[in-house]
Amino acid sequence: MALTARRSVSAALRGAVLSLAVVALVACGSVGGLYNAIPGDNRPHAKVDRARGMPIQGIDVARYQENVDFAKARAAGIHFVFMKATEGRDYIDPDFRANWVRARDAGMPRGAYHFMTWCSLASEQAAWFAQNVPFDPSALPPVLDLEWNNHSSCKTKPSKADALEKIRFMLDAMERHTGKLPIIYTDMNFHRDILDGEYFPNAFWLRSTAAEPHERYNNRPWTFWQYTQTGVVPGVRGEVDRNVYYGSTEDWLMFLYTGCDPRAVAALQATGRCLPAK
Image (cartoon, rainbow, N blue to C red; front, side, top):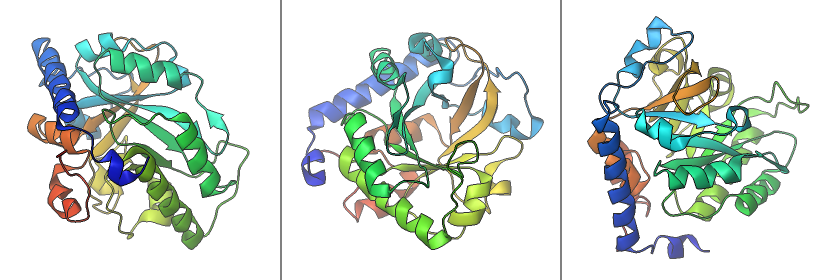
């Protein structure tokens, strides 16, 4: 489906998405989750304490969390989930399809992420992502996970120029498939080696578990912050990554409505993105 066609999603559908978000926020607020996020963490680090008190809390999951009870997590104050979908050119997380449906049915905003590998072509990875991640206007923007593949059989480290070419190809392909500007997730090592100093219109999701992101990412603006990997959340078996959205409840509703960081909406609308349905 063409990007322009996908942007013609009806105002009624956008309104339904926004109404669902409001209902979810009210439900979280009714149990104290909106402004008193559960501080569950098996190994809390004092330097990320600010994240625990921010209003819009989330998690990210993969097969390791197994059967997530998204309704229970939402009732405990979790406002969003990002879930692993695909990796490289031929791997799909075995729990992705179930997670995708269960989170939707629980009324939890959810997005899919692709883990980029450096031993296959970006075109192959883009095709694999499009084949396995459904087009869903109600979903959060997709995420491109950018890290060095230190824990896989792929030990290739491309040059900065080659890596950036592949990244930009993948981001364009994910945007065409979903109709939304992808989010970039990264860690400190990859950001330092490849992304630091590079401009992207995309929102950033930064991993920083022992300091605030501005201290580790050269003041890179962030929209999402992964602040612990030892989180404890009702409805999730074992430990889970916990994340926070940068802004207020009103900012979050704007993000859900436009798919873009509210601080960048005006500039991005000039490029034809983040536009409300007509």
